[in-house]
Amino acid sequence: MATSLNFINFVCEQIEGPWNITYKKMFGEYMIYVNEKPVIIVCDNTAFVKKVPEISNYMENASTGFPYKGAKEHYILDIDNNEHSKIIVKELEKITPLPKSKKKISK
Image (cartoon, rainbow, N blue to C red; front, top):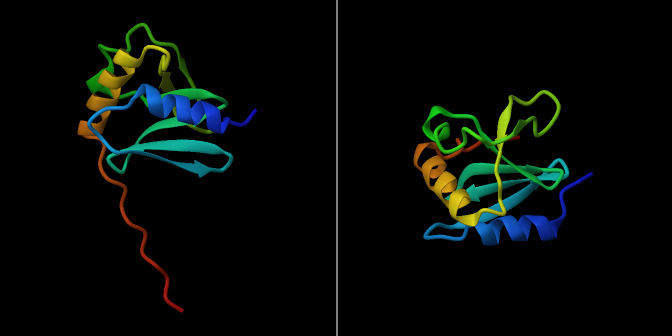
Protein backbone atom coordinates (compact mmCIF):
# COMPACT_ATOMS: atom_id res chain seq x y z
CA MET A 1 0.00 0.00 0.00
CA ALA A 2 1.54 3.27 -1.08
CA THR A 3 1.40 6.43 0.99
CA SER A 4 -1.41 8.85 0.18
CA LEU A 5 -0.80 12.51 -0.49
CA ASN A 6 -3.45 13.30 2.15
CA PHE A 7 -1.31 11.54 4.76
CA ILE A 8 1.81 13.45 3.66
CA ASN A 9 -0.07 16.73 4.02
CA PHE A 10 -1.28 15.64 7.47
CA VAL A 11 2.28 14.82 8.59
CA CYS A 12 3.53 18.18 7.32
CA GLU A 13 0.73 19.99 9.18
CA GLN A 14 1.50 18.11 12.40
CA ILE A 15 5.17 19.15 12.40
CA GLU A 16 4.70 22.78 11.36
CA GLY A 17 7.13 25.03 13.13
CA PRO A 18 9.85 27.61 12.58
CA TRP A 19 11.38 25.54 9.80
CA ASN A 20 10.88 24.95 6.11
CA ILE A 21 9.09 21.68 5.35
CA THR A 22 9.13 20.06 1.92
CA TYR A 23 8.66 16.53 0.63
CA LYS A 24 9.65 14.45 -2.38
CA LYS A 25 8.08 11.34 -3.78
CA MET A 26 10.63 8.55 -4.01
CA PHE A 27 9.89 5.07 -5.34
CA GLY A 28 6.18 5.42 -4.54
CA GLU A 29 6.83 6.64 -1.00
CA TYR A 30 7.94 9.98 0.45
CA MET A 31 10.81 11.70 2.22
CA ILE A 32 9.98 14.75 4.33
CA TYR A 33 12.70 17.37 4.54
CA VAL A 34 13.08 19.93 7.31
CA ASN A 35 15.31 22.84 6.30
CA GLU A 36 16.40 20.72 3.33
CA LYS A 37 17.49 17.85 5.61
CA PRO A 38 15.89 14.38 5.23
CA VAL A 39 14.19 13.83 8.59
CA ILE A 40 11.10 11.63 8.13
CA ILE A 41 10.54 8.79 5.69
CA VAL A 42 6.91 7.91 5.10
CA CYS A 43 6.04 4.44 3.83
CA ASP A 44 2.60 2.81 3.80
CA ASN A 45 1.11 5.84 5.61
CA THR A 46 3.55 5.37 8.51
CA ALA A 47 6.11 8.00 9.57
CA PHE A 48 9.56 6.61 10.38
CA VAL A 49 12.59 8.35 11.89
CA LYS A 50 16.13 7.05 12.25
CA LYS A 51 17.14 5.34 15.46
CA VAL A 52 19.82 7.69 16.73
CA PRO A 53 21.06 8.16 20.31
CA GLU A 54 20.02 11.82 20.37
CA ILE A 55 16.31 10.92 20.40
CA SER A 56 16.39 7.57 22.20
CA ASN A 57 15.11 9.07 25.49
CA TYR A 58 12.14 10.64 23.69
CA MET A 59 11.36 7.42 21.80
CA GLU A 60 11.87 4.78 24.50
CA ASN A 61 8.21 3.68 24.32
CA ALA A 62 7.91 4.00 20.54
CA SER A 63 7.24 1.11 18.22
CA THR A 64 9.87 0.25 15.66
CA GLY A 65 9.75 -1.09 12.16
CA PHE A 66 11.37 -1.23 8.76
CA PRO A 67 10.19 1.35 6.23
CA TYR A 68 11.14 -0.85 3.28
CA LYS A 69 12.86 -4.13 2.57
CA GLY A 70 16.56 -3.92 3.32
CA ALA A 71 16.25 -0.81 5.52
CA LYS A 72 17.65 -0.53 9.02
CA GLU A 73 15.20 -0.54 11.88
CA HIS A 74 13.58 2.87 12.49
CA TYR A 75 11.37 4.35 15.17
CA ILE A 76 7.73 4.78 14.21
CA LEU A 77 6.74 8.36 14.94
CA ASP A 78 3.34 8.85 16.59
CA ILE A 79 2.41 11.64 14.21
CA ASP A 80 -0.97 12.13 15.92
CA ASN A 81 0.95 13.56 18.89
CA ASN A 82 2.05 16.77 17.22
CA GLU A 83 3.88 18.26 20.24
CA HIS A 84 6.03 15.14 20.61
CA SER A 85 6.57 14.97 16.84
CA LYS A 86 7.80 18.57 16.82
CA ILE A 87 10.32 17.78 19.57
CA ILE A 88 11.63 14.83 17.55
CA VAL A 89 11.82 16.90 14.37
CA LYS A 90 13.66 19.68 16.20
CA GLU A 91 16.26 17.24 17.58
CA LEU A 92 16.71 15.42 14.27
CA GLU A 93 17.03 18.67 12.31
CA LYS A 94 19.95 19.67 14.56
CA ILE A 95 21.96 16.51 13.88
CA THR A 96 20.99 15.60 10.31
CA PRO A 97 23.46 16.81 7.69
CA LEU A 98 22.37 18.40 4.45
CA PRO A 99 22.39 15.87 1.63
CA LYS A 100 25.51 15.94 -0.50
CA SER A 101 24.88 17.36 -3.94
CA LYS A 102 25.22 14.88 -6.74
CA LYS A 103 27.81 15.64 -9.38
CA LYS A 104 26.35 15.97 -12.83
CA ILE A 105 27.87 13.77 -15.49
CA SER A 106 28.93 15.77 -18.52
CA LYS A 107 28.59 14.24 -21.92
